[in-house]
Length: 280
Ligand SMILES: [Zn+2]
Image (cartoon, rainbow, N blue to C red; front, side, top):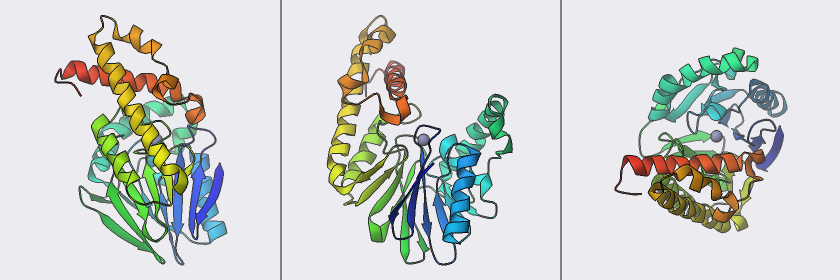
C-alpha cells in the first residue's frame, strides 16, 4: 500500500493489489475521519494501524463516497466508528452489497472476515459539514459513477476526495454519463489544490484543467462510438474496434484494467440507447 502526506493531518493511501483504489484520513487532535476503506481487509487494517499507532488517534467517523465494495466493505474494520454516506448508499449496500458479499466470499477466502456495516448518518441532497480539529470537511453529492456518489472537500486545504466521480478513466456502467460529466465540470470549477481520485494518483493544481478536459473528451468520444454502434447490426463487433487510445485515454491506467473498463462503458451506453431510443 502506498501512503502519502497530502497536507497537515491529511493522508492518502493507494492500494497495490486492486485497481489503484484510494482512501484517505483527516486527523484531529483527539480522533480521525477516514474517507473510504480499501478493497481487501489487509490494506484496510494496515491503514487503521497507521492511524492508531503513528498518528495516535482512534477513527471516529468513516465516510463512504459510494457503496461499491472497494470503498465501503471495510467499514467493519473500524468498530465503534460512525459511518456517513448518501442515503442511497445505505439502500444499495443493503440491496446489492450484502448479496454480492455472500457470493464473493465463496470466491475469495480473504473476504470471510468482512461484514457489511450500513451507514448510520445519511443525507439526500445539499451538503453536510464535519469539523475535525482545525479543518472543515464539506460533504457534497457527486453523482454519475453511481447514484449515491459523494465527495469530501477539506475546505482549508482545497483538497477534494472525489470518490469515483473522478478517475483516470471515467466509469459509468453503474451510473449516468450526463451526471458524471456534470460532476467532472463542477469539480473543475472548484478552485482545488488537489483532486484525490477514487482510483489512481493525486492530481495536482496545475494538472486539473487538463484532467477535466481529457475526461470530458473521453465521455464525448464514447457517446459518439456508442451512437454509431447502436445503429449497426452487430454493435459488439464495432465496439471491439474502438480502442481506448482513440478516445484519448491510455490502457496502462488503473493497473492495466482500463481497456476492459472502456469496453464495458461503451456496451453500457449502447444498452441504454437501445432501451431509450430518444438518445443520450
Ligand atoms: Zn471504485
